[in-house]
Length: 452
Image 1 (cartoon, rainbow, N blue to C red):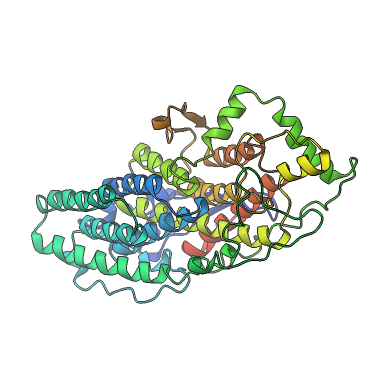
Image 2 (cartoon, rainbow, N blue to C red; image 1 turned 90 degrees about the horizontal axis):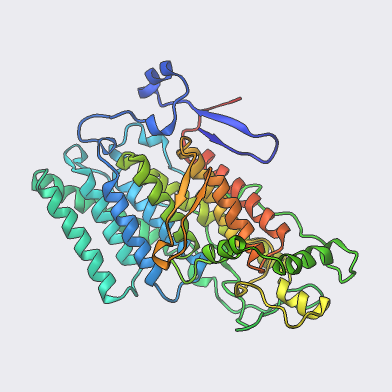
């Protein structure tokens, strides 16, 4: 397993397996794809990821149709649904006591009494149905019906494969897990993220931008509780380039680059900007959930591996956004459109994309992408070609990448082409995300590592 650190050169980190699996060390450095082996008959490691994939697909539909949730806010349902999926089956996973136990403040998980008799896919099914009902209370009637229908369809399939007592016991347990995870999610602070905020004024400070001139979005999102303990350690972006109106200053040149780039955009750069706009669409967190879903469909991993990837990638994206919003409202940096209009004096200029209603530095999309990509890069080290079909339904051409990191870098770069971020902000956001993703991996996976 590999992931990157930016405190020095890249480090290769190889898992040291739990004692029960030490025999596998004889085969050399294990990748997570092979971590658990097949396990005992009936363990979550012996089932395909189909149940997880079907619920991911439905959650993408829920994200696409949801209203009243800010774009970055979709990181929460991604992460909490993943955690519910993982915790609904974790008791049946070999060595699960060493995996993903750093959930920040999560208590009250029920005991898996009689779990040796559980049909584990039924637990994941019930947990994901329940948590999605709770996370999307304002879903349309059609979407609520879709949740009910998928839960019942899968349950019917399970009853054809396993005794009803095993299916029912597992489903009851999954519902309890989802209830505990949702209750925990409701205390993370998101309800207070939009309380009244006085926008600082002065040279270089952010102000509402055209055309909507919207009030600052979720100014207290950075106060949300991180999902993983310690995930934000050393992730804060440094101070941005000092503000200046001098045409020879680094700040002026940085903004001027946004304008200059906008004057010569290629067709591919314009397509890139719109491809990563994500609204309208499945949201930016949803875009990464879609990439994970496509990866699972390609790799054909176990239900356990899929649930772990769901949980950890969601946690990394969620926590990277918290770190990002802490910095956004610390520096309140002016957006390109304001500076180009008021300082450079080109009042007719407009960016390719509409400017979001929050301060510029750093880029939230970049932070989200860096965090999620770091986890996926580590959990799926064998993936060296990714063709993303997320927006086929919008008639956007699929885009192909050499790695998850390459996906993240393009997502960040798209914000420059969209005219809504400076290059420095994209780079800073990526670094925040990379560091957050690394912390999530270190805190959540088994604690013994070989560092070369």
